[in-house]
Length: 279
Length: 185
Image (cartoon, rainbow over all chains, first blue to last red; front, side):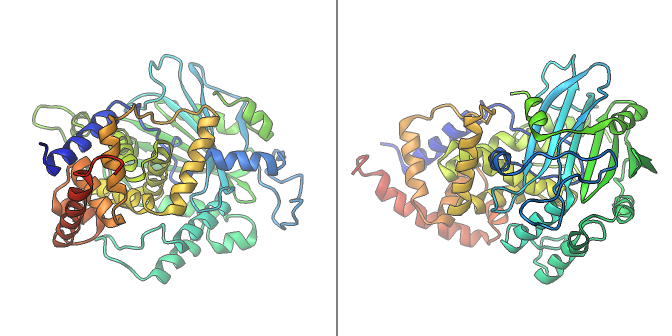
C-alpha cells in the first residue's frame, strides 16, 4: 500500500510532467519596455463596450472630451505603424490591463512584429530581430500602481528584502517626478522629468547606454540605445501628451529604422486596432 | 564571462530547466521562458483551475516585470514570484477574477497554457490538498510540486523552516486521514 509520502510525491510528479508539456508561457511584457502592465483581455472586452474609440490629432491633442464628465480628456491607446521595416510582419496586438481589482482598467496596448523568417514567433531568442510598439497611459498606470499598493499587492521591502515603511514606499510611487500624483493632477506627465528619470536609471554593468533627446512628430522624445556584447536594443519613447507614452523597441534593427517607425506612428480607432489584431 | 565549457553562462543556465540559479540582472524573457511552465504548474495545484492558473502566473510575472530592476537582483527572484502566486492563489477575490479573465480569453480563442488531463487520483489528491488551510496548501504545493527544501519554502513564504515543518506536519496528519478514506466518502 502506498504511503502518504508516495502519493503526494506522485501527485507532484504528475503535475510537473504535465507542466513540462505545456506551451511556452506568454511573456506578459512583450514590449520589453521599462514599464508595462498585465495582459487583460477581459478588461479589454469591458472597455470595448463602454469606451468610445477616439482619434488623436497628429500632435497628440485629444479631439473629444470624456462623456462621463471626467475633466481629463479621453485617451486613445491605439496606434498603427504606417512604416513596417522590410522583413517584418505583425505578430500580436494586445490590450493590456491594470493589475488592480478594477477589471476595466485598461491602460496600454501593445503591437509586436517578428521577422518573416522566424520559425517560432512565440519565442524570443537572444540575438533575434524583433520590434514592438507599446502605448501606455502613464497616468492610469500610476493610478493602478497606487491601487495595487493600497491593496497590498506591491511589497514594500528594501534591497535585502526587509520590510520598509509603507508610507515611504507609497510616497515614492506618488511622488515620481515623471508620472506621480502631480502628473495625475496636471493631466499629463512632465516629458522632461520622464526623460531625466530614464537617463538617471541605473546603468546595466555590462552595457553601454546612449541617450538622444529629440522630437518625434513634434513631440518630446528620447532615443535610448543599449549596446551589449551579444545584443543591442533601441528604444524610442515619445511623450504624446495627456499622459500617453508611446514606446517603440527594436532588437537587431538599425537605429534609424526604429526611429522611422516611431515617426510614422498614426493614431487609429479602437475598431481599427481590433480589426488588425491577429487571432 | 564564459562558463568552463565555453558557453554563455546565461544560455547554459537557460538550457538547464531545473537549475534554480538565476543571474543577477537576468533578462526578463529568459526568466519567463525558464520558469514559466513550472509557475503555471504551481498555480494550477494551488488554484485547481487551469484558466485561473494561467492568469495567476501572468499577473505574478507582470508584478515582477514592473519591478524587474529590483526583483532580478534579489538572491532568488523565482522565490519572489512564487510568493506572489502563492499569496494570490489563496485570495478568493483574485482567484475569481482570474477565472473570469481566463474564461473571457478562452471565449476569444486566445492561446493559454494548456495543461493536459491529470490522472483522476492525482486530481483527487490535489483537491483534498486544496481543502487544507491556505498555508498548509502552499507548503504542500511547494514541497511536492516544486520539490523545494524546508528552507526554500520558508524563503518563498517568508517564514522560518520550523514554521514550514509545523505546517507540513499538520497537513500530512490531515491528509493521512482524508486520503486513506475511500474516495467520495
